[in-house]
Length: 464
Image (cartoon, rainbow, N blue to C red; front, side, top):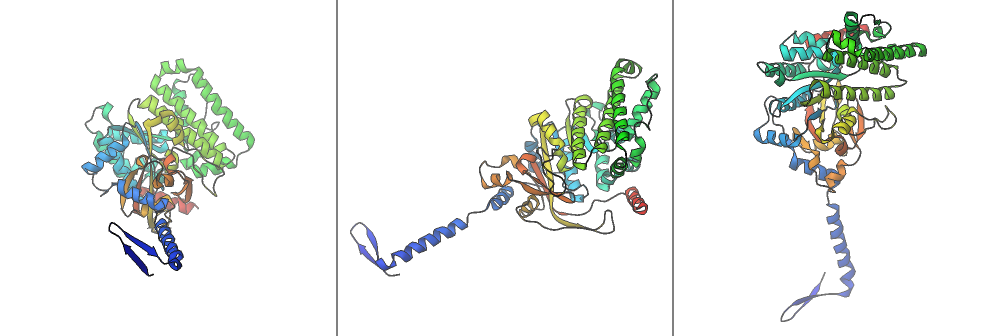
């Protein structure tokens, strides 16, 4: 392009030849357009924001550094209840990150109870172990209703750490362990029967009338199958029996307390309620309805523990992401409509005193020589929560989602529905609504079942 310049005493003017004006305008438009295309997408904005605000986790075998711990302390704030989730129950690295978080919450932030995704009655064994040393931990872990989740080297190490932490401490300062699940209520209902045999004085109830044989083995998938084969009449009989049991416990409250104690009675009543809720869940017409009953049952049990067992203490809940989440989620292909987790009820009841931490990972694989066999988890798109965090490039970290700047690209990304690994499926949820914080591990491997767990897995395989 040829230009002529006219220079005056105070200025220089550029004069375009008329035939070149159109081409120059086109060049300007092209340059402006090119600059517009360089504006980062919301996914890129989110990844950049995480990179700037994350709390790095340098190692899993040592405590957080002073700066990292201070950032965690600030993130937890004055919360009384912290739900810590995981996208899969069986990933070694997620269990270890959660264990690290739990240790800091206990040791540095004064939390004094751990509520597990486990039966209330079964968790009593762990509570007695960590508070008094009673029992053989290897045996106790394998006796849990959820042994296939909990009986791992990673969980055993955490429980053993809590036991060591409690040694020499006053009872009020010891960490307690509880369970809040309703999927294995038989042990608790049997304790109700045993209680009434001693102090009931004429109150008649038996295991068969309450359907305890249906829950043999405490393995909930088998219980589902047995309930599915029941007639409608049998289901009604079970529901009526549980209703009558709870009514008589309430009617005879004064007499039963006089023969035992207020605390023992309240626990027995809870175990009966859990039995009823479990029976309702297994009797439900489909898994979606059963899942909703389970979430309500876990929330109710958790709130009871907070109110009756550890009033005023700070508490950690250990469960899957889709139990501790503070908003609804969907499971495309598995359930119709939105599902409401336990965390929604806890958030409604506790307000800002409850915060939820979600977990996820980038990629990894499982070997074929351990249950439940070979698995491959490949990297996913940056539009998916797991994929976006993987693009940050940091092996392990925590990120406080509440710190995001409103109306920014990162904020927009967090306020849209996102896929999220959920065991062997994918959940769809809004990250900013579901979780306050998220932890991420880049690479995962299979958690380590104990020798006793491996024996039970092999036994199950032989039965099938």
